[in-house]
Length: 494
Image 1 (tube, rainbow, N blue to C red):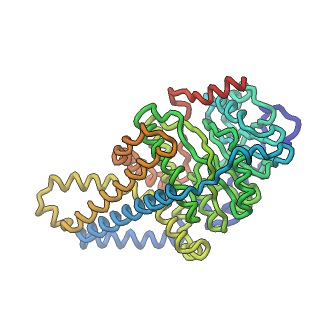
Image 2: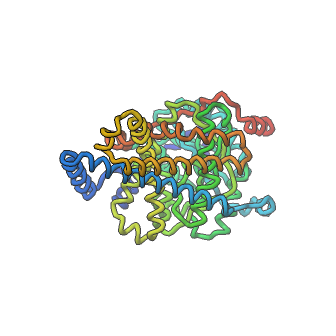
Image 3: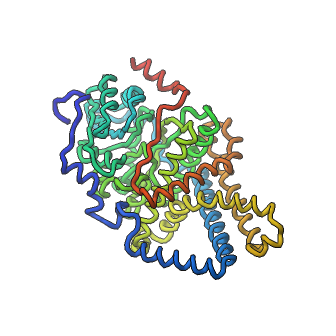
């Protein structure tokens, strides 16, 4: 498929391919690209809004604080209530694409299409052996499987580690030329340009997908027709018992992938993709323009763009196991990048809101606003609400009422308490489908977990201003927990 080269011989794309990977979407459709943060209209509108807020603050500070408190508390309640309603519907209706073992057994190897697997890596030398083992366990004929490990030009250490791991013949290493922006989506665009498959999936370096995941995705595509451009597999963690952070991480992902995404799929609402284990029809992915290399949550943006073009995102009953974040600083880096990407995606699609409403309808637009824009707003509101609550306990009532009338304070407190309770409830739902009942009590820690999100959201907001395209790397291979199933599979395979 890719010529007579050894698996460890790097494929070096042409300069034209590298340029298209970085600038293709911007040159094709500037308004859908995150290359610049604000459009001219947004800059003008933002300037007017800031000046207005400053003037109102000087003249009527108390009224401004009241207005902010009411608006943000209502936005917090609306965003959390939306997630609650969608998750409950996802729990009520089993809409995940169920693929039986009999259906998988009916597939004939000689009739299977070529499948491309993209694995973007950067400074992952410590886990490439695990990567080769996990992807080597995929149940798919190797003559129809194209695994491309996407590396950056300066990352010779990872390429050396790949060569030392003795990868199978269907593995290929791609060396993306040095360029800007140096992001995962840019590397993925390089891989897309080189891909020979009819279908394509993204995995991260530490992923262990179910061996039959590719076949399940193929069956789901065939059952749903051309309307579905991508199907998303669930993500979960093998080190959920390692420490409190990994427990909270697993709770969050369990409700998101087992309830939230099925709820969105049930109501045909836009689905922000996860960063891994999304399977594409390659022709549809190329029609969408690939990934936005300037958006640091390119997966969420791509899910929204797919919806705008009339495509659906499906959800399949297959799981990819990952390593949950074990370190708070690492978590802040990862989550701030995600939140910054949600902010980018919100600004990009807010450039022409009327057109977006015409493309997707009022309901889908509202869902996009509550989920993609509402999530950062929710997290930004947490620390101020906590601070306000603490201050209100110590300020004399007469001083507090001069700034914020009691009815306004009670309204904000009610919204915040109800919203937080709803999220604790849906987080408690998360473990039930997988039987991880030991995690249920940890849902009560959710208000504390949100403090980390709020810190990350302010970091994200600052980075959006000073370095919007900076890709903050998440370190992998930090866990002390052993993925027993992967070890067992590796031993059996060996």
